[in-house]
Image (cartoon, rainbow, N blue to C red; front, side):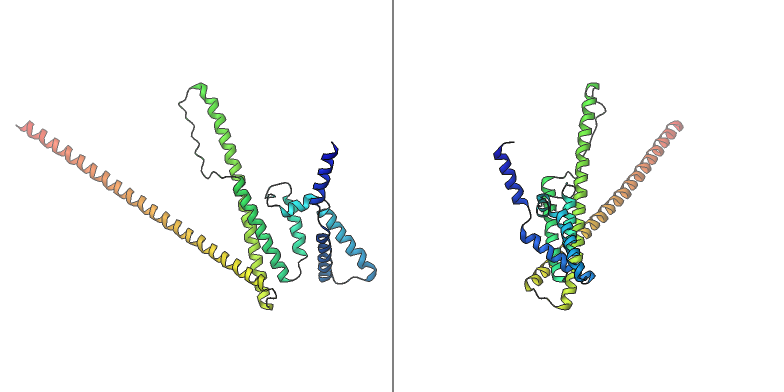
Length: 270
C-alpha cells in the first residue's frame, strides 16, 4: 500500500468519524435520561456510573465510521450488513428523548429515514409482479436441458423479487408503527400545549397526509371489492346462460329425433 492510498484512507476515516458535538450531545442526553429514570446517585457514584454508561454506549456504537454511515445513509436498508447497527442507534436515541416534543422530532426523522430506505429498495430492485413460466413438453430432447436451466433462472429471479417485497413490507410496517407512536406523542403534546409552533405545523401536515393515504387505501379496497362482485355476477350469468343454451340444444335434439321417428313411421305405413 503506497503513501497516497494510506493518506486517502486516513482522510476517509476522519471524515466518517462522529464529530465532537455529536458525542457531547449524546453524553448529555444519556446523563439526563439516566437521572430521569433512576434519580440522582450519590456523589461518589455519580461520575463513575455516568462515565461508564456513556463510554460503553459510545464506544460500541460510534467508535468507527461504519456506525455513522449506517445511521445517516439511506442506502443502508433492510437486510444489509449495517442495518442492525442503525436499529441499535435508533433505539438508544429513542431512549434518551425525554420530552414529548423531542420524541415527536425523533419519530419524524425515523419516518423520513424509513421512507428514504423504501425508495432505495424500490429503485434498486425493480419488481416483477407476475412471472409466467411455461415449459413446452413437445420440444426436442436436445432442448430439454436448456429449458430446465431457463426455468431455474426464472425461479431464482422470482425468489429475489419475493425477498425484496418482504423487505419493502417490513419497512412499510416500521413506518406505520412510527406513525402510530408519533400520533400518541402528538396527543400528549396537545394536552400540555405546543412550545414549538413549527413542530405543531409539521405534525398537523403529517397527520393530514396519513388520513389522506388511509382514505385512498379504503377507496381502492372498495373499488376492488366492487370489481370482484361484478366479475362474480358476470360468471354466474354466463353460467346460467350456458346452462339454458345446453337445455335448448338438448330440447332441439329431442324434437329432431321425434320428427325423424315420425317420418320413418309414416314411410313404413305407406
